Image (cartoon, rainbow, N blue to C red; front, side, top):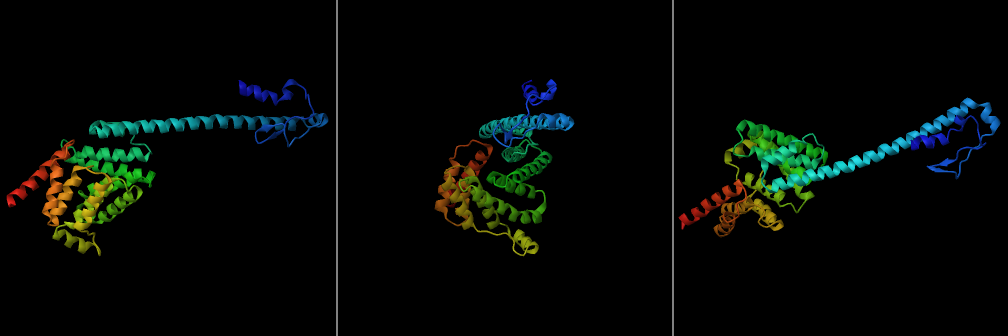
Length: 317
């Protein structure tokens, strides 16, 4: 109604007369300052049709501008609401992850699997992978979930190439898929995996997990069996390689960034020192891994492995 009232003021012909010889003045949304134009009464009456069309055009232009403002405001409100909604979902997701509620987290995030938000998508990739690793997941389901996780991680990376977490989880998921695609694909993917771990570290040097994963990459290729090395040399001119010293550097760096953040980092520090024949430092880190509070099933497995390795020390004395 307010809009109609405004338009009525610009249509004096609707009252049957032209009351004033000059009508409208407008500049960039302000009225009555400059760029004035006048119409004498005889000119108005002599070209009444043109005058009506001019007024109608002005009215429709104004109407369009008003509609644009209304829709623009609505779009802004919708966008703000969407941002707050995403933030709320992310908070719920992070709470469930920290609480170890793997299945509830997956159920929450799969409701938004069509999302275009990178933060939601990489969390969904992580949740899919975590479900795949549960002991109750069948081998068939595990395979489906591993490929599903890779797809989510890929989409996250496409949406935001500056997300360190998207790079990290994309690399992790490619590594998982390699278990189903044979040794050739696994070795070929190693270069891609390394590239994305390095990018994740570059984007966030304070993420201990990315640094730890780069250490695992080095450790894996340092201990690659001879027959796999031979296959790699046959398939690639320069196959991926690394050393235990390189792996050790990454594990220590991760520990410096975030001390005691992960039981597996402690275990791998101990195992890497064993590979380097430093039993004293190996025992130090293995003891820390054994004594690490077990919050997850993986922590319990690491405690057991560390204890077994320490028992091996005792048997050798």
